[in-house]
Length: 574
Image (cartoon, rainbow, N blue to C red; front, side):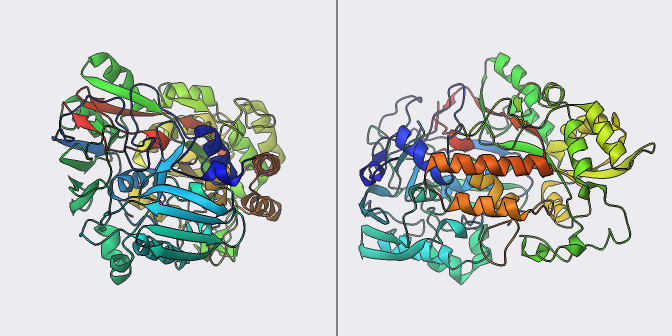
């Protein structure tokens, strides 16, 4: 393991960071192929621009348009953000105590340095003179208020990351002391801007005065200030002139003057806009167009696995019979749709059969155009200390065994059963391929394609037997399992995003053991046991681990894609 000195700033090397991230929430950050650069540096607050062209005087200026393939940004309050595209956006608007550097190490953000007087006390030395976008001081008192605000939010999905905090003290303007009730090895990883979320700093006074307005138009302290937005259309980010960050040469950041983020939910529209020069950057172009983009000569493409996984989530229980269903975020009144009706997916044999009916290699070629890896278990490739290409046990294509299980379960008709599969427009191609595969074993599937915002509403009505479900920026099993699969509780983040009402007390107990364990080797042993339960229950039918193609015009450089983010801090437009 590591001692306290390993955890001190201004920088934690990649080896120690990997241990930290593996130990509690952010393991094995996804890298990116190609020429993408990362915001982050070896110094306390700087932002690296290692791959971009040099500029005189710090700012090359210029404005760009960027496409986000989503129809609405629901949350910009980082204490509630839990979707990859929202995290990627708020990483440009806010600062954190620390952040993930370009090589996967933990480096300072607002914190220029930090130390551990003992294993349960963190002392952060903050940059002097930093301010929020409204000019208010971004000092130790402000960070204290942000932390305490998160600690008071029973409905935040990130509450569990600060439950061990005993006290937060502003020693002076630039010194913050955080004392924990007990030693928590991964605590520093929770403090990262972006993936950690808990250390992202909000203007607590503004957030508490008008939470809804703050979520819509937040007062941040990052490289860019949100100055305008049109719901469902665009968000306008302007460079914050008083941002404290600098690049490796000491030049002020950001280099760009502004970034207009256009919300483009339709993939074909995104590609048309990118191909036609209407936007300079896309956080996700359709995989079928990535090869063409690479051959054009005017576009650069980066393929990144941002801790992402795709699955089909089968409804495991009748919501009317689940007493804890009301604790899941977004869940409304339990539907009575299934009263007196057969719900096949409550039978584990049916769930296993669905998993066995999926030819993952064919799905990658037909729906991902090669931009994915097969998912045979729950741990995605960014969780390198647990991921296996061909795990045993695992979920594998076996249509004959699938049909035998369905026979055993009593589903022998033609079709054997009819199920509804819910998904968003970006899922539609995969849904069609899955529909054909399930038909081969006698399962008839009706596709229910909803726009992104409507998709979430429909999901939590639990009226579809099957749901296309995914996760992004999941770089530790805690992030995948705790909020997605653990049985929800009345307070805290456990089970906050339960998509399919799965529960198993043995699985829950293993997750609780994992959360209280700092040693990576012990965690791995616990997680293997949890994996066995997951596979035995077929809680999800895993499908693929996608690679996200991000495209930019050739003259745009310096965008940070670490952990699947799109950081424009050091971006420059020639």
